[in-house]
Length: 422
Ligand code: PMP
Image 1 (cartoon, rainbow, N blue to C red):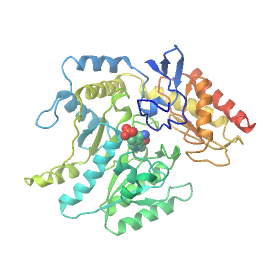
Image 2 (cartoon, protein in one colour):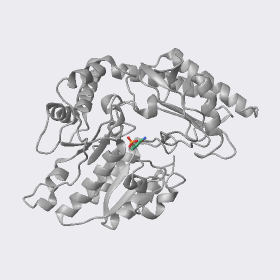
Image 3 (spheres, helix red, strand yellow):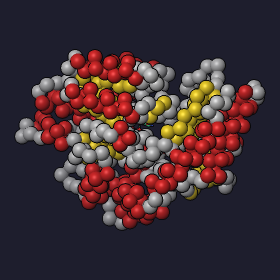
Image 4 (cartoon, helix red, strand yellow):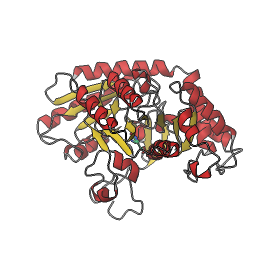
């Protein structure tokens, strides 16, 4: 790996074993060049929702290539993007009215931050402060790194990152501290927006908090005229048990970011949804109030067609039933480990299960992470713990037997670790 031509993401080339070459994907599996089927228990970095190569989504992609490739998305438009925007508004929390396309979770969040600042700027009442939640993760671009938790991931770039106000994570029974901190920040009148992962912090360690906290944060924001940006890049498309996590708190954010499962995970696409007020603040005969954001591949028609097919899958297939069944299985498995001394904490939220292995030193760089990965890899399981946090976020086509196998391996890994053999 030391002299690989490809520079892989989140990969220490001096330490990692050779990449496993995947030649095909199918349902919950990656098939490697030797024919081994590897259970994709983390949905390939959380993107695959229904399963790999869902036939309806693949067919929509094939069809779209008959008529479209990339076209410029200013001055010219296309039906897949228009239809998708209408479809998204229909299923999103009520009150969101406009859809801005980009191509990754990070850019969806960057767009959201620019919308928020542009909103206040165009109203002639500039606000420049952004509040975020401790342990948050919003992407790896400079803006999203600024908003995310600081640490080993972004230390070299710290001098370039902008300052944000960090609210303490709403730990159980400590929620008021978070609410008070947000109230105090808002009272300055300078907070443009609170950027937050609703109910579940993904890369921060699958940490959950109560829906009521999100609802209260929204009310505080409203009282002070600040915006709430929901980063649903990970939580969207059913992961938490509902289509969007915000639904569980009964709120409509002012801005909602979605990507990953938007195309069922098949192609890169992102959307930032916003309210009419935000769109209208950019409407003017003064060209300086234009929303100046684009990227070459904005609203790629083939990706939009894949997303439209994904919407149809949600309408026509029993996706919610699959999610409920998966949620139940995850709950059953996690309950078995609830009082297990090998784990310091266990959590289940919708389709996601997380177990914190009890280690002397946790955290992302905990040495146990790579050892666990190797252990799972040998067992043909794609599981990439976040340090000592072992989690499963499988596609919804995963079967009970496949989950049994994954949890069996977690059980075995925990025993080996406790015995000092891993
Ligand atoms: N926001 C959240 C909550 C995420 O989990 C991620 C990616 N894991 C991102 C943003 C960034 O998405 P992308 O990797 O597609 O840029």
